[in-house]
Length: 100
Length: 396
Image (cartoon, rainbow over all chains, first blue to last red; front, top):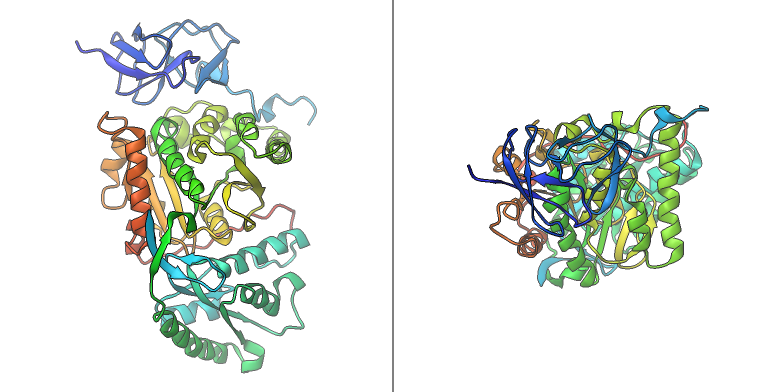
C-alpha cells in the first residue's frame, strides 16, 4: 500500500502534520526533518492532525514550528496521534492558579 | 504593480467610494435605505456609562471609519451640541474627519425640528453627496498605497502550514512597497510573542508587544479557567489544534517576515507605513471595523474550516463597514464547501501544484484587481451586522 505523507514544519519538531488521512497500521513518510522519517501509525490520524515522530516522555516538550506547543501529559509512542488527550498547553492556565 | 483607486485630499487612495453616515441608528439607517452608495455602522455601544478611555475608543472607531480612504464624504447626524460626552459630540466627530479635507455635513435633529425632519434633511444631503462622489475617477497607484488588515479564523492545521504563510507573503510585498499591513488578536499570539518581540524595529516596541500579551494572559489566569476551554475554540480543537501555543505559532505566519513597526490600540491610525500589531480581540465584528478605522482599505479573513462546520460569516460583507472582505483558505475540504463564496484558494500548495511564493504572487494580483474595483464574493450580498467596538473597562 502507498505510504501516507506527513510534514514536519521545522527540523526541531517531534511531531509531523499528516497531509492525508492516516489509518492505524499505515506507513507514513515524514518530510521536513533533518532526515526523512518512516513511521508506522498506531492510531487513526485525521487530515492535518499531528503524529509523534519519536517517542516523547511524559512532561517533555512537544515541538512544532520549531517551538514548544505544550508538554506531553502521558508517554507518547512514536506513530501515535498527538492531541488534547496526550498533551497540554502551559500558557493561560487559570485552572492551575493557586491563589485566586 | 499598480491598481486603480480614488485619489483623496489627504493623499490616501480609496478602493471603494462610499458616503458614510455616522453614528448608526434610526436616522442613519433610513438615510442609507433611501440612498444607494451610502454606508452606516450599527453598534450597541453608544458610550453611555463608559469610561473616558472607552468613550475615546468608540469615537476613534466612528471618525476613523469616516477617515478611511474608501469614504468619499461623511454625514454626521446627532443632537444638541450642548449635551453628550465631549469625546462623542457631533461637532468633534465632524472636525476630526474634516481634518482630512473630506466634505463633512452635519444633520442636527434639534436644529431640524425633530427626528423625521432630520431623516428628510439627511436624505437630501446624501443624494447630493453620492452624486458628487460618482464624479471621482479611478487613477493608477502603486501597491504601496494599500493598507491591509488580516485575521485568521476557524483555524486548522492548514492555516499555519500554508494559508497564513501565503497571506504573510502578501503582507511582505505590500510593506516592502511602502504600504501598511496590520494583524492583531492578542490572545492568539500567546506562546509566540517572543518571536514577534524579536522582530520589533526596536526594544521599546518589543517590550510593548510582550506587555500587551502579559496583560491578556493575566486576565485569562484571573478567570480560574483553563484557556483551552475558551481559546483555542472548540472548532480549532476539532480540527486538530491542541493548545493556544500551537494556534499562536501558526497564526503569526500571516504577519510575514518584516520588522514590526509598532503596536496600535484598537482603531488607532498608524503614523507611518509598515507592519503593525493591533492589540485587539479576535471576534469578526470587532477586529475588522477596528482595522478599517485604522485605515485598512481591504481586509483578509484566512479561513481554516477543518472542523467542517459551515461558516456563515463568509456571506457577510459588512464587518469592516467601508472595506471589503477577502476570504482565503488553504483547506481543500473548505474550498469545496465554500465554492462561489471563497475569494482565494491556496490549498494548491498542500496539493503540490504550486509553491508558496506562486500562491502568494497570485494573491497579490487578486488584491490589485479587487483594489481596482473587482468585487469580492461577499460584496455580491446585501447584508450587514452590527459591529462590536473593543472596549476594555467596566461599565457604569
